[in-house]
Image (cartoon, rainbow, N blue to C red; front, top):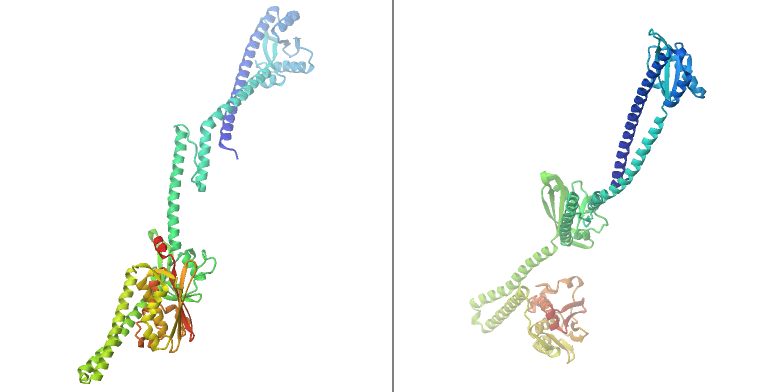
Length: 591
């Protein structure tokens, strides 16, 4: 492919060559016409002069060959005298027989065309000879012969050669000038154009960093500057678009809800990470929606949106692997400008946790109501019995009052635990961190629970080193161990055992509270830290438990940046392990 620079130089060369060729042809014709006209004029005068001389001599019979030979030599022409029949009476011709034959033929032609004065160019071109004749008249005015003067005109070829030599020389010089001037022109004008074209091509490919060099402030400089400004603007626009696209992509990919975009033909054109986690089916993009979505209810939602062009929202239970979730599926039509149908946006919003929290709230209200109803009913019933006359029976009155006191204490503990748990959940715990000797703390807890241990004949063994110290809030730590040991007593049959062991590692202090009680089923382990959840509801309620102890323990351990784990086997026992960070103050400083 010829570039612009070569095209420009080639065009200039062809233009100048055409001009010079036309000029050469025109000059050649002009010189030819002028030369022939000059020769014809000369031959006409010479023939007239010779004819007059022959007439003065006395006619064709008195011609003087010697004089005619001298004249022919001096005029550098061929002189001939012929009679009316075309026969040559005198001829100063040479030795070329072919040329002499042509000359004799022309003499005869003249005799046949007495009325003609000149021969056509076609005759004289044949041998490159120009002829002219004039009749010889007698004194009475009769024609008795002809004077023929001829001259070779092959000098025209030399003139043509000189003209074309000049033209070719001029063309060669012009070519050199074209190359020099064209190089300067291309350097000054074409090169910026080529550079601008290359930059435009790069911009079309998406390379917005391409720039052209800027020339001095003229038309080409304005072009280069404009292209550079355009490139900078496009680069800034693309950078802004990339930032916007990255933000949008990051938002879409990291949103917890599954997003699915379906075009107007039913093909999936976009799916975020959450949606892909739900449907681990490999490639999703450019597939039909019903090839990816396996739930008939969701397919029905998409079809309803396609048919009605309205928002559709439904809550559906969906199974992903072995897990069942509550999903709120929303389908919305995407309508462009001029009411142009673009497709559908489907949103999968996981409301399993919301449903769970809602159920927990309902359970909480039901449990609180149930827990308060029992003591209130007891207090009200025994109060009515006392008012109906039981006060007169001292033993019955004492028994009823003890029951009322016991139930009121149970209500007090329930309300206290609820208030404590509410404060922990809403405001968090404000800990008064101190160095707490672990063995001393556990000993004080065990002392407060001795009556319960003795009542059920449960043996408690503690294996804690004297040097173990944990950092934490002493009051809250007592709550933790009181609740854990109380639960162990509650769910351990008479004559059972409880073990409290402590150990340490590089970063943690671990305390285990084990029992030989009834144990917990594996399916119930994830729920034991829920409020009011009881493994054995009848036994825990009879013992005066509120069902909030483990929930409080969990929040206290989280406040201490610790962990609580549970292991249990049915009818063999349960082990709670609480782990404390040794350098808790450093951990709080990082936070």
